[in-house]
Image (cartoon, rainbow, N blue to C red; front, side):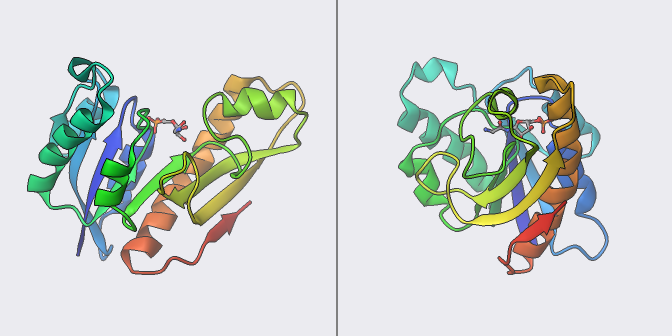
Length: 196
Ligand code: GAR
């Protein structure tokens, strides 16, 4: 049984779907939800689901990313996770953290990578006149929003879409894709899943 830690900064809707999926004869179990923001809604939702939570606020580290990451690792390690899932964790990670969890850290990104790394993905896709948007789950490597793709879901862009309406449609697919990828990954299968 693989132990999964989920890192988030916001509402945690992906975290909820991941936790809810790890039931029955699933090859993984949630052991920790950690946030860099003590006000993140995802922390309350994790507690309601009975998952232990931790907070490591990045602000006292005043931009010293490695010191923040050493504190993150110190908070994570007692929970002995085999897999780290980033689920809306909005801090850029350095090689210190990434190398600690090399080959066992996943991220979900709201675009069809390699297109639109970084922020404001939906606005950028709309501005570029794309007809398809989507989301990607990938292994985390040293480059931002890069690393082997483990799953991708396409979502059509509809006439009149705003970044908000598109984000809501993509998020629904994130909730399907991420649990599907995690289940495969926890079972040792890195073959990508393509939806849509
Ligand atoms: C999700 O859309 C996720 O793809 C995105 O943040 C949102 C978190 O929502 N992640 C990134 O932009 C990472 N660069 P949630 O807190 O409801 O899961």
